[in-house]
Structure formats: structure tokens, C-alpha cells
Image (cartoon, rainbow, N blue to C red):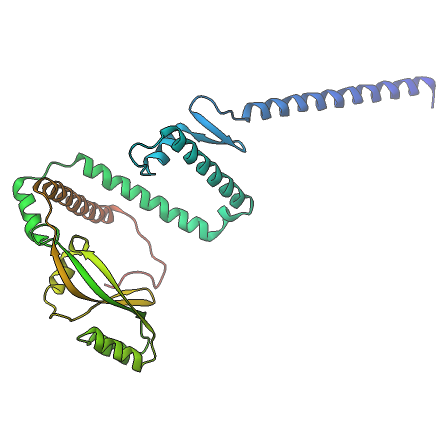
Amino acid sequence: MSVASMLSTLKDNFRREKFMKSRFLLGLILVTTTLSGCQKKADGQTVAVVNNDEITSSELNAELAGANLPAGVDKKQATARVLQGLIDRKLVAQQARQEGIDRSPEFINRQRRVTEDLLIGMLTSRQLETGKIPTPAQIADIQSKQPQVFAKREAWKLEQLQYDTPKDPKVLAQVAQAKSLEQLSALLSQSSIPFQRGTNQLVTSVIPAEIYAKLVTLDPGEPFIVPAGNRSVASVIVARQPVPLPDSAARTQAVEMVRRQRASDLLQQRVKQLRTSAKIEYKEGYAPGK
């Protein structure tokens, strides 16, 4: 190789190294700038940053509002505790994402359901807030249709049996026909089904009107049975104590019930309207029967 060729090769190598070094330095500058630009700070509306995940003041305030703090609590200390709880939640959620849980079909399905429930709840709340105040006639009507909440509101003392729900249909039918807890306990013992006795108290305002109408027709000592998953609870009313609401509280509750019923009716009407204009396609075998 001639001297001229060697000099030319050296110059080319020098230019190439200089170009590569420049590209490296430029890339390093860009990466540094990007990282510094994305690094979040705890200032302004951001009260904390957890691994670059912000906790805003509105998020913290929402948690405080849902904490049902007792009156007279030290707000500064309570805010600090709630914030630490938020930080713990962020850390655990971040770990779950690192393990890929947020990409699992189960998570996606449950997240979709939670989002839809939240949207429906907020739509219902908006209708409640914008609804008209019920008339006196509407208030009187709801009070007459819900005696267990108003005129006949009572506290019931209950004696109970808790047991595994029988799987044998024949035993299940016999249990349903029991006329006393003693008769029921005998049936359960004969079927080798363990049970526990206990007592409880129930305020009638939590009972739906259609169920209350059936309970008040029971004979004295006759049990009513409520299934709860794989367990059932049989109860007998052994004492009743009237607990009427003050007039102001009764009116407030009646107004709320009317507004909620109105919102529910409006939502059902909206669903019917949406169904008429929606395009719904079913996979074969999934369409509702005609």
C-alpha cells in the first residue's frame, strides 16, 4: 500500500470515529434530557411521587373523604396516615404490574366490570342530583308502600340456626316446611348436618317491602330461612320493639327513596331506548329466545 493510500485510510478512520463519537454524545444528551424531563417531582398538585407514579392532592382528598374520619380528629395526622396508605397501595399495585397481572384476562375482565359499574353509578348520581324534589303526595305514597321503614319500623330480636345448606332436594324440601327451630334442628340432626345456634337483631327498615309482607304473615315461632352461599340461616322473631323515625328524619329518608326510585325508573327507560338504537350482534347460540 502506498503512503498516499495509508494517509487516506487514516483520515477516513478518523472521520468515522469522530462521527461515531458525536452520535454517541448526542444520544447521551438526548437520553439524559428525556429522563430529566420525565422525572416527576412532588410539588404543585402532586403531594408525593412513588417510583415516578404521582399521588395528587385530589386523589388524597378523595381518600380522606371516604375514610369517614371521626369528629375532632387531628386532620394533619389523619392526612399523613391516609397518604402512607396510598403509598403502600401504589407500591403493591406497581409490583402487581411488574408481575404482569394487569395483562391477564381475569384482570382485564374485572377492570372492565368495575369501570362500567362506576360509570353507571356516576350516571345515576347525576340523575339524582338533577332530579326534582318529590311532592308531598309522592312522599306520602312511598311511606304507605314501605311500612317497615316508616309507620311500622321495628327492631326484631331473632333466635337463629346456621347450617350448611342441604344438597339433597328431599331434605331441602323438608327443611323448608319446618314450623319451628326445634323441628328444624331435629331434621338437621337426622340428616347429619351440623348447625350452630345464635341470636341477632334486625331493624325492619333494611328488609325489602315484598319480603316484609311475607314475614309479617308468619305464625308465631315459625322460622324464615335466608340462604347465604353454601350456608343458610333460619331465624325466628322472639321480640319486637317499635323504633319510629322522627318526622324530619322520616321525610328526609322518604325523599331519598323517591329520588332513587325515580333514578332507577329513568335508567331502565334509558336502557330500553339505547337497546332500540344499538347494534347488537350475537354469536350463534347466545341470542335470547324469541
